[in-house]
Image (cartoon, rainbow, N blue to C red):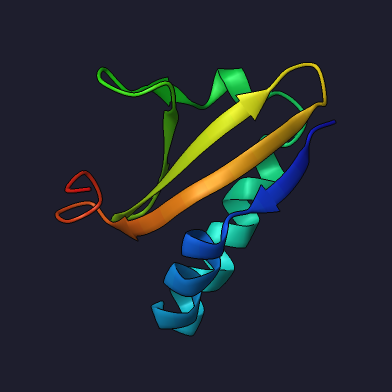
Length: 83
């Protein structure tokens, strides 16, 4: 089972999300902790993965050695890929 760690940016993103979306994000992250590669899609230009939570996307990286997922960014699908 993988541990979930939030970056400072992801924590700020969570603060601005509506409560129902925040709960959905936590539920999705909890669900994928056992086998994250099954649910994640690799991003083309980054060494990261994306995960769907309704209309919102979660950008994560995975540390296989430490069995951790680092949540980098959370946002609406229209704006998430504009870094």
